[in-house]
Amino acid sequence: MISQLVKHVRKIYSTWLVNRLPRTPSVTLTQRRIFIFPGKIGALYIALLCLMFVTSINYQNNLLFSFSCLLVSLFITGIVTTYRNFSGLAVHSGKTNGVFAGEKINLHLVLEAPVGQSRFGFDVGFEKDVSHVPVVDGRKDLTLPMNTRKRGRLLVPRFMIRSYYPLGVLRCWTWVYLDFDVWVYPKPIMKPVRLSSYGEGKDNERYSGESPPDRVSGNDDFYGFKSYQPGDSLRHVAWKQYAKTQQLNTKEFTAEIGGSYWLDWFVLENEDLETRLSILCGWVLQCEENSIEYGLRLPDRTIDKSLGNRHKETCLLALAQYGVREGGDA
Image 1 (cartoon, one colour):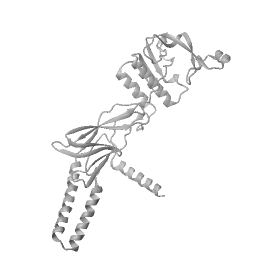
Image 2 (image 1 turned 180 degrees about the horizontal axis):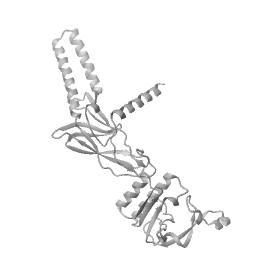
Image 3 (image 1 turned 90 degrees about the vertical axis):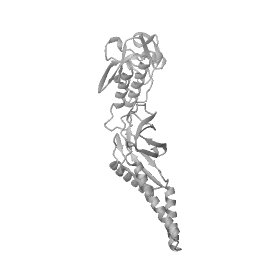
Image 4 (image 1 turned 30 degrees about the vertical axis):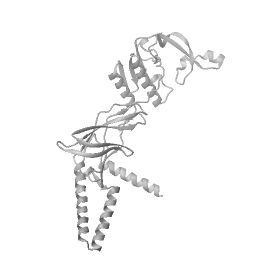
């Protein structure tokens, strides 16, 4: 019962935070976004103030009473100073390169203080993993490490910026939802590139993905047999051999290396969606590694043959975006 109540309260709090602090590429901290509350030391400080105040009244001790008033004024001044240390601080999402699913990504974050002013003593990060920033004087670049789970648009969860400056008794913090324009690519699966009927003639050979060989898988000459793997074309299964040996093998054909290749979605008809994308991702990396020109064919788009980092990024981005709705999570 209590656990359900706690979950319900957390859900309401999260919804309230999202509505109050929406996701944007850049934010400037204002009164609406800044929260101030006594920390653990602050709670002891208040308890000491109450004890001193009651004692001064009970014993009619003017010196102790004056000292209590001094500490109260110091506490109030600390609230104002703490707020001013946060107010005006700008937080921006920087350019971050994509990674493959399951890898750790380093999010580029920029803190920027108002011109001619400095800000002090910040902890920035997720709840259990924070980085300390002693001073923000002008522009300060940071990286936030984060684990990725699956391909698609990376929706970064809220992270916290907090400070105990200047007295250490007040905890000032804010939650930030930044919109990072980052996509997570499918986790690559390294398999031989399969024959595609799309395109023109000998440009549709299979490439094994190892260091550049003298011959690659193709459709010219019979080369031998290999054990059947799920997804291999049924047209190449050695059915006569299976009838004799009860072992399912696939015929391999070779062709001279050269030309270019189509990486085709439709040759992977026996695989599920995510496995298809992962295999295609592996094919892209193999072709790039061995400097073999390639094109990518997906159900919703076709990318012409080319080679190079820009072409690779275009293909990987297309794989990351395939089938993902707007606002898709990674």
